[in-house]
Image 1 (cartoon, chains in turn orange, red):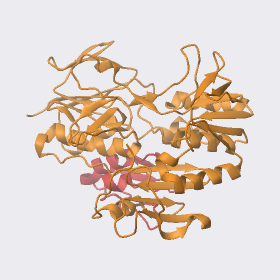
Image 2 (cartoon, chains in turn red, brown; image 1 turned 60 degrees about the horizontal axis):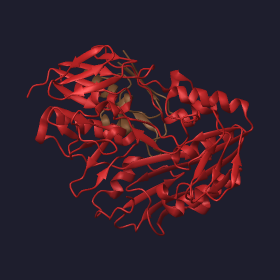
Image 3 (cartoon, helix red, strand yellow; image 1 turned 30 degrees about the horizontal axis):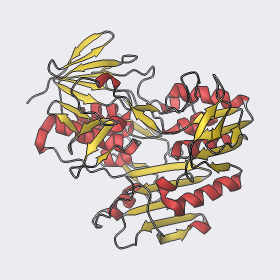
Image 4 (tube, helix red, strand yellow; image 1 turned 45 degrees about the vertical axis):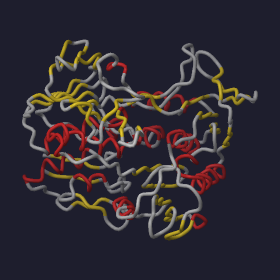
Length: 386
Length: 63
């Protein structure tokens, strides 16, 4: 099958990597990219850090421009898909493809009512709005203590704000495990962040702009600015009724395919692993790696390699640089490979140094490639995370 | 083609070196090192692809 017209739907790093991979694989047909963003492809990674702190602007986050021969349509959302006719619908009319890459990503999850204008951080515009809001307030309440929520808390603290984080469980534990999670929380609390655990969840108070939350046991937390960082929702509405299998994302096979002509990658994709598990991995590294495999499968079919995520995650907060490889939420006590958390720099492995299933570097300058190599060859450990 | 790396911005995630090991590598402190500043023509696409996957936009290419 020789493809002549590949359409990439999406405008972030999975879409961009798909385009780059097409070019590296010497695809010489037409490449059309449909992005609903105002900006050309940019990185979201600094939005919760340098951009929010006011140190970086659009110029600092926009990625190197696409090659001239790529047809990039900004402000162009896909509104529907016809698999039989091989056509993507947009408000500007239909666009035909013979190969399709679905990389529409995800958007911020919201927990407020329709009457509430919830502050979230996902797009560059969100980042600029939040930055303006942060200038005007003295207290900030972050709802959600994942990587994003804790990074927002860290930046708000750096700006001198009074910061509270509320979550269903101790922040970061389900990502970094309890050992590193509690260490980062201790550093955050020493720096001045208040952490509140509300096991029953919270309800946003105030309309239209939320002014606080109420916990299920009746506690009220209030702040000048309330930010929700409660996860993401894949952008699949445009695929409703198309026949593309959906299950909290676009379900793809082990080569990232929906069908021989259609692949998906990045935050929107849900990988069916063969043992019945469906895994969505909304992270930068996954978007890059998965897009590379997806495009190879589009071009080479069954001869393309199966996708094996490297599962590399990182976060920067409260002066800590945390890099991790392996399944999230390592269980039990780690083996210390170098340094120690008490000393402020540590290289940790679970369950042991000989057969690590997870390795975490905290303020420890080990190149990620080396971290990944430490897992390679080791026997696979059962995944604790769901 | 010229490649520029902002070593202050680099956080050492190493995606550039995964995509284009012929152009980018990481030193012992996990900071990017350019193997070519002036990129030979046969590596230009790789250099561009490697630059574009940097999560902190620390890499630039210029023709």
